[in-house]
Image (tube, rainbow, N blue to C red; front, side, top):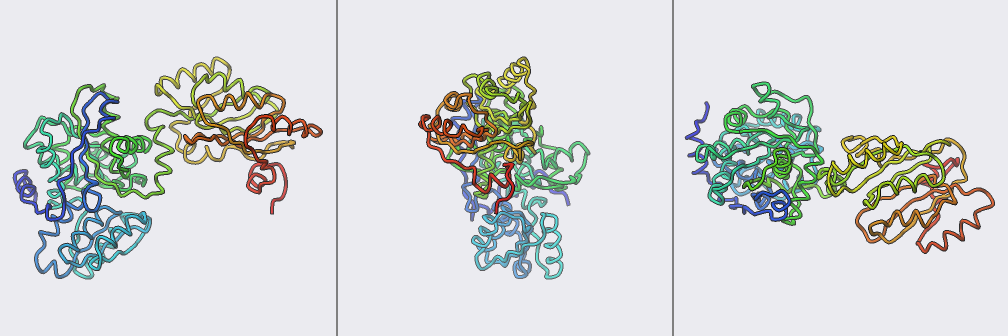
Length: 515
């Protein structure tokens, strides 16, 4: 039976979620507001006991159970946040809960479910996808008579999430546009059905990961349609098929849909951290990623924009990826490949063309007697427009350049694999150097080395530390090693020869045998 808009209002207003949930803060993002020229507000659902909004919907649904259903227990399938909400709610209501989670779920979320549920929650790890976990949960529900608690496509779950809309309107009734993350659609549907009835002029924009845009696909088809696959970086919204009820409400009340990339999500995680010192999970940062992208696309100024930090259950090790990719998402870094002539001084000439710009990464490898291939990371002060000028300059100088900034394979793998064994035997010796890190430090380093010995391998990565770390290979002809040692000793840099390092010999050298 379809729930009317009036009934949704009643369900939201009478929801018992505040037995367990807090009225989360709506905070002004000062730095991001200044950077984008708009007033930007963020609803802090990371302040909930389970670090996400999912507690609201799960608790509201469990509170509607009959006594017989409570005695039988409940079951849920979830990649994490909904599972934590159900486990926490079950413990509060002292109801047995079975939580079926994919085997690929981050440990932080599995451990959290066990902690929040205590003696009342049992975790079952099954399959490698949400679909497999959901199928197992359905099987167990049928077998044992458990009540299935849906993660999003349920009127009581939707109403529980809708209590956020009630708080938003009380905390800031003057918002012009609200951005809401969409996975299965429960959050967007609940907030939109409440706010659009009370403030229809408020613009609501759904934000999806471009790797799991099930609402966008459903709107284009006119009905929920299953995606062939979804990306798992933003695992909290990695949903193939939007719910039928959530779609009905989103189709009616959502004004626009925008999709964002993984790099843009990483940039949003950094934006949130810069203003709040909170580390959002990827799905939790979707709304801020949408705000940044929408403002840039439409040139918005002076608007009051809102977003929701809907979760902060991030796997700690994911931060390595986020840190690596956030500047690409902010368009503050470009990565590209270039062919340069293989002759003494060519590498230094190329670096000089880049001017005083900060180089964030160099991977260099001798390719043949005629050319070398390099992988470059470059910090941008003015975004893509600056890179276009650099690209034009390099083309005029005769360099072949390939922009890899949007190439996932290059950013995930190739940037760390540039190299290989040289095609001909070299008198190659490899050294690791440390030098003081400051603007222009790499250029000074190359100038100091001079052009006497040909560079055959080069890897440098700027991590913002006080010391720059470089791995360099030199072709040192026989009979000139003493002269080389004297020159290097005069440089004043800390260094260590790595020619006998087994990792170098196994992967990069022309020497045979390692172990």
